[in-house]
Length: 322
Picture 1 (cartoon, one colour):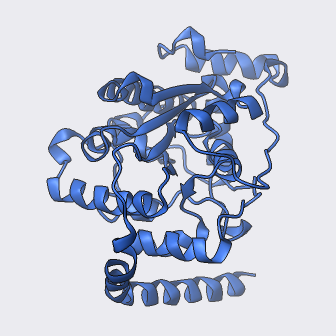
Picture 2: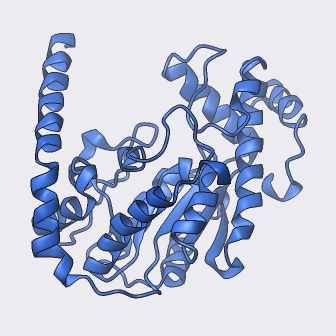
């Protein structure tokens, strides 16, 4: 099995190197054959799903992209993240806008569930942004970086004539940069009872064999100071400070461009409401997933007490608890 994985990894590396070599020729193809079809519109802005990890963002992303005619980066397009428009064009040629009908993932990763499945495409953003931290402050913003991001994303929007949906939770810590690139962007801010988020993060850390003093997933601005905390408290602090930053920076955008959605609200009706708010039509033959709900009676008394002791160290608002 390990030998098989090594061979696969080697092939993937070779393929990525090949795509890197093709980057400049493909850029010429984009400029000569795709860019002439771009039509500018101030109303076509990107849409971002943001929030803390383990809040249901993946199933929301999958549901919206499957049932509404949004542009999104699938597993095929993500391979061409250096040429985002070409990747989206290639995917459209292959799949012709068909739904992916996939609602499976492993901690947000859909790589093994088909080329049409939606991808977070973090590699696209890492072309400009650091890997070792996620919060981007005003002093970190480079004007040329903003222009390049805006140009790459807007090219996809303008080519297909409809919004593009991103689910990349790091974006919640990059809102100051995104405001300069896309001042009219829309955001779906996903919330969940922090007791269940912390429980889910702890489970994810265990499955990924993450050490107690090691970070996992999205990093708030102060993540280094949180590494010394006991693991459950570090997870609670992670959620609190991520959400605190998001709520502060969402004020940079028009109120009507932000929808706050709770995990418990995820349903077919909510997906339809969000699709109408984004302003897109339904995708033909797209199916809807089954949405899970959190239930306090799923926790034993001792576990619930431990979670509440941890969560109560941070001033989460009452409205987020079920």
